[in-house]
Image (cartoon, rainbow, N blue to C red; front, side, top):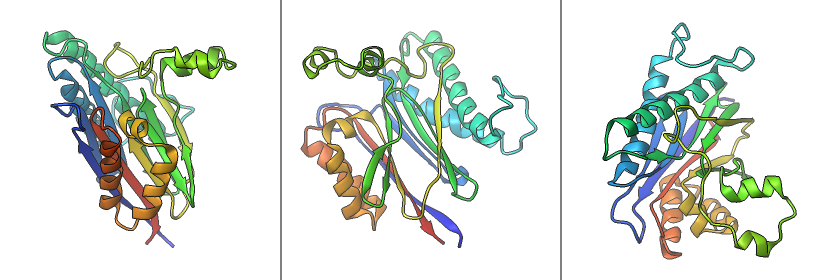
Length: 258
């Protein structure tokens, strides 16, 4: 029995911002999906997030045939598909970094990125991320976080795992330690998963999981998954009801039998 992929995406300005600096890509021709959460003054964040999505898409188009000159190191110990995903994000990082140097208005711009790339006829997927945009997987009724935020709090927890709740509460929130465009090179974290029929994967900017508990996310996906457009709309609506402190973006994908 074959597999097909259903998908939907949405972005919303939220309740407290005038401009939307998020961007997402439903790159169905490559079975690739991407969320980027931009940052920077003078609306440069929307330039960075849009450039991230466009650069990844352009690189995937360039690499439909494998016999190309690779712009960064090609790791022979990794499959072509993982190299392709990692390098596409590194190319995006380089373009954003150079863009921030070439324009005063875009100085300091950057963006997070989280992407999922389905391969082997939907029997495997690669999940890549930089920053604090997340990927979750809903399998049956269990919601699991598939990425670890590149954040100051997580760095502290790695260095001192026995920190108390009171000590954690004193640390600054929403400080990320990795993003596209901050330096001329970036480390991209990648993991590979084995999807099962019925699995849903959610990509989101940090405000979605900041405004919603894991249980709220789980309940909404289970309740609304018959129509994925309604699923992402319901997630954003609930995040706005809970405060909507920044732009909100979500993509959901589901593996179904053909």
